Image 1 (tube, rainbow, N blue to C red):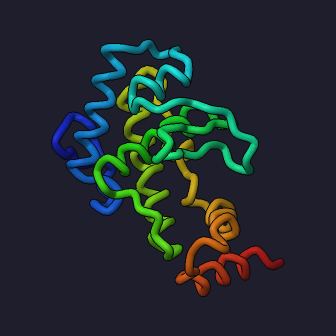
Image 2 (image 1 turned 135 degrees about the horizontal axis):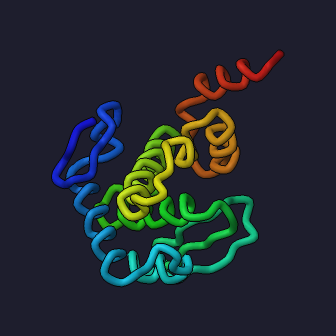
Length: 174
């Protein structure tokens, strides 16, 4: 493990494209806000409100949650704190200029994977008494999620990863 600008230990396999000193500072700021204003059993609405000043809404969409950056809303359906922290991760990306609606699939996947990485480190820095392993933050890293993401974005962006997705689909064949 390596350390960046804080006491948050980063797995050495995590690349700077997924987490860097700016992101670590933003995570540390959120952790400090949490420690000052919230308790570990705080309602999701309070966590969202204090950590990013967004409103929490419920959703019936075919997702566990999503972040409306322009409307300053986080929609939540299911999945618990890993989903809440994932969506708060998007607000960090947005504030740092890392979140863009790229029209290219590989860029969109990188943004989502970066967000999962942010969620993992932020959650575990706050909930040190009940940490979760990387397996709790695998959205957009698994074959199932990547294929779902491709279908979700089918009409919104250019699929520069067609050969990659075809290989994933070939792996599913008996």
